[in-house]
Image (cartoon, rainbow, N blue to C red; front, side):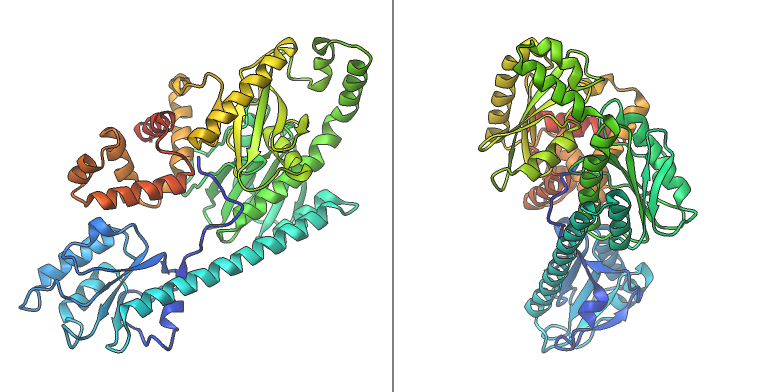
Length: 509
């Protein structure tokens, strides 16, 4: 499971945008002219084998210093380009002068054969200028994406205040992702939609039913067995499942945090970095809009409060708070990572955890959650969760949650449970284990080098040197890749429970 920040990841930039920079005068001389080729960075290297130093998606820059004095054989260039492609390199830039007057023909042929875009870098253009241009384009793309997400959040909030809030939120969401938004009810039936119908709506409904079936039990992410490209991420108020339709449309389903079985389905022709954040905001709003009206819990909570004020015992009024809870509850203490909690953020957290029983204090938010709803990490929050307790044990559970939160903050963990352990994964049936593995490792599926590095590093108990030897890479490359894994997974790889869960997932892929 990967943390989804409120700030979208930096979008990659199209190679075509770099080629369009007249000040650089770059020229593509080999490889496909595919507008879909994107860059995640730029890196200069004169290594004979650059593979160990590639993370994937780079424009690799070289002046050909590594080429043998005889200008290199065809086999040499074929091996060189093969290693770049294997390492995930997006394109190769060859600097003309001072070493070579022209790009070697054998290199052009190798790039053409392996489908690697080859750029000629003229003598007046430095590699530093090319790298700076890539980062400038990435920063502009990030700024534009941030602006788009901010505008979308404002429009969704305004839609939620309209007399017809649910249809209005769906319309805004569909417009912002240039696709469709559908609200499904507890039985998997379509309640409301925005956007034009499409054949993709059938697999979207199937995806939603996976989460509908689980929403009443526990907010665990799900990914369908037919997933071809899945990047499942826990949203602010939802569990999610994602898939790619046969037509190429990107599908996502969000189980709303109200716990009533409602699911938001989203279909879009593409998936931009900020789309998940936008959909998550819509899911939070829809959770708040559907939870209260459908459950009728507001009157029950008022009744419970009155009985407490008039001398009723907690164990007598607890059944009024949730029809599903029985007598077992969890206490959750939460602190935001960036700012002091406010009522809106506290309410959104309660919706994410599936409970409206929220108490906002000076620097901590306390949430009373039915034990049947297992809390999961929430982006932007640090959580401490108590053991399940009956109403008489609530004060002790409150102290447990406080201690768990203190431990989470000390260890920089997203969530710590009182008396937590990782042995429960062993109880999962094989199908559940595989689904969990796909969900947890989805952020790494696009990069085989990252997945293999993580697998080897875990198998060698986190040894940098032994992993570097096993993979024939530099130990700094191992550190960079493991850091990248931690970032993509949104987790702390120093936590032994996290390592165990990842190892379990890698063994059950």
